[in-house]
Length: 249
Image (cartoon, rainbow, N blue to C red; front, side, top):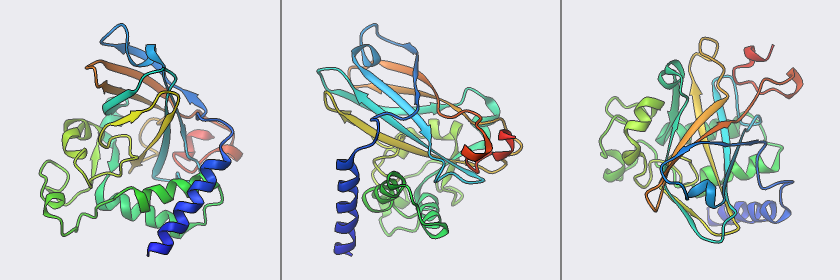
């Protein structure tokens, strides 16, 4: 087991050192509002996002984010909440957590060999470094943390319920630390952090096209900022993912 982990870590290091074409993903966030005149984006926080088409499928969409700190000071994000600003999407789009997230990751690996290096590295962080806790874990603090997650044995929550249970979701072991809804994170001056989220759409043909996420995050100094991120657009068939494919026609 130790050797396998080290191999994955070595591969991830090679991917990081080889570098991507750009630090950022395709679509940049737009600042909607902020509670203080000088904070966050005004001091150099740049956010971008993009759908990972290689990992998305009929019912699941993976969205990746970059948070880059272009300032000369540390930016510390205490928490992030998401919203679609659409009643149907906030009710119908689910956020898999716990064991469901772990099972999904294994299913993706079994379904196909990921050819894209960045996607392989992403799956490595999810399954090896993420610290995912199974719903059947023997850790009582993980099993019995209360809230809506395990009341009925479910490990996926609608966005409305997620935002009502952020404190619960940030407990250790519920989500991997690279998940955008996990516990807070810091970005050193001149560096960036990568985050992601998995979206489950049970009825992808019956809900609006999911393309925009609103992020509301709280900074260490108490400032609260909100950004709009259009993470994908309708594209030609050859470039689309399988997620909500009917909207691409």
